[in-house]
Image 1 (cartoon, rainbow, N blue to C red):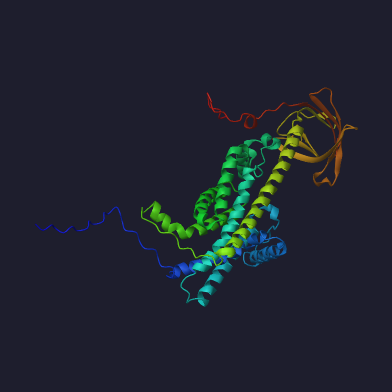
Image 2: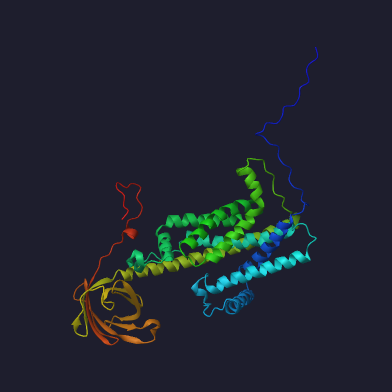
Length: 446
């Protein structure tokens, strides 16, 4: 008896066939080509000074390039937006008017460059090799930058404001950025965790096989950083946003494959990566040796610099706590022979005194803190007080100690004769002293 023919079973709907990868020579869409030209121009223009900063002995070129954009930004502000006051001090942060104008100028030039490129290079159908060439410096710039930021946190040398004067301030006196820095300063564990995420993501960028994983980590980390900077008014909004753009640029080629894997539940294919020219024999060995030396040198120097910074910070903090333990509350304040009672309404009445190396800090009125350069002479038991910047000597106060807990200051300060009696405070701060507890029988949320 004849057997029936066995027909192959139809593939089940839940097991779609894998799509063949696009051939390496296939062209890009016009929109993708135009977008790439703009992105290429923008990333090169914005990140060139940071790239130059990692190359030794060419600091002058970096300064000249940055100075050119600053000149362009100032011209744009004066002649286009009619702005008169545009501070250029780099210590003011990275979100000043000049930096925003510089960003606007870079975007405008990148658009112009992209349009000119489109008109002059209309026949080219793809930029795969140029894209790979741009990914190399993008990986290293972002990698070195994020490793630096990561090690600052791991070694505990970025958020360092949980010191005595900060603990003396009221909550309402803090700025949004000061609140963030105080929050981050409290927990070493949280600093190490966030810093390790940045450093690990950065190291993964140095190898093409792990770039996708590193970019995924850094996109998550930098999205959080950018949100914090905008939410707490931190003065590096422009810079952090551009670091996030670099991470997204590195992640972009793999987004379709990630969507297939995570959303569509489809099989994926490896991304086609052009091989290196020097990828065999002694050429490959030489390339890997140079790469290892280059990366190792920068990672070593960045870590060494952060460790040295940490040692200096720890020493200054220990000295500060030792000196700021000498905190006095003013009991009697006599000015020009007349006692001045404690009153928050009087902005000149001293409330507390804080001594540290080279500074006499005074809390007056409703909580304002005044700091004066000061020199203490142990032999004469006097304190010489100067105006800010040590431009003028304000006066000399004589110190005496009736007992271990009290301090008396007498003398002339400015146009006033002062007689001050204060007692030493034994201060404790729950934020500094409580620490971590595995077991809490009751919430401590004061």
